[in-house]
Amino acid sequence: MLKRAAASRSSAEWNDDDFDMLADGAVVGRIMKAAASPVGTRWMWILAFGPREAAMAAFAKSWRRE
Image (cartoon, rainbow, N blue to C red):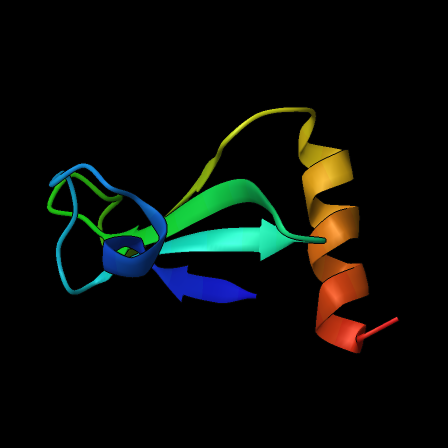
């Protein structure tokens, strides 16, 4: 699930194109438009913690609504 950073974080370190990615209610990453993103991509996904495989599995599970 995506949640706007403005609704998820109390700090002012976010903009309108900044989202927290949640799986089972826990923040597992962040998706945002970034000027420092690789050429040809406007969006960046940053893992909040844990191994990449666990975060991807949690996202896939929530995407399929299992």
